[in-house]
Length: 226
Image (cartoon, rainbow, N blue to C red; front, side, top):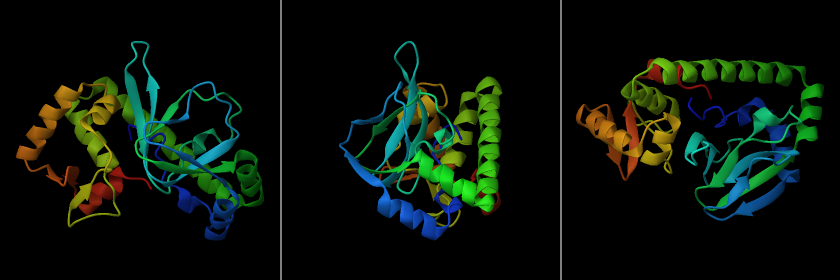
């Protein structure tokens, strides 16, 4: 994904249910109001952040001050699991799009669990490999894809496979045209024009201010890695 998906990580299922339950019970809960920053560059984070309730965006800032959205994070998604084995300062921003509840799980606790569970270690290696492949896909789209192609690629990646209505699948509730533009290196105005075009072509629909995209099951499985 252009993001999710470098940072939108629906991999809570990687961890055994009992292990995840124990981490959630022991983890420290922190609350943020809409618009507050959860993470800023330069922080040396010693915990992995799991969203319990609410939504957040993960982004970087260009030198011209524009936000480059890396992903959107929803409940039961990790913000920074990819940083578990890193000792470097973070380079990302994470901002609450709504009131937000975060569970902080110490990195060392996760590392200990991985060391004691070879199957989990293999699953994480597989996950990191998939993330690497997604980075390559994103770079190819940004380098060679037309804006409309990049937008469709992104919409397919953001489709939620758990909330389907027939062959229609929704995008995250909190996503805006500005967010989409930031993920495909375009402008809000261009994204709005293209979404109107896709709507006329019946590729997407708008229900209750939420974007839905038409995908058959085979295409959805190919486009989503959960």
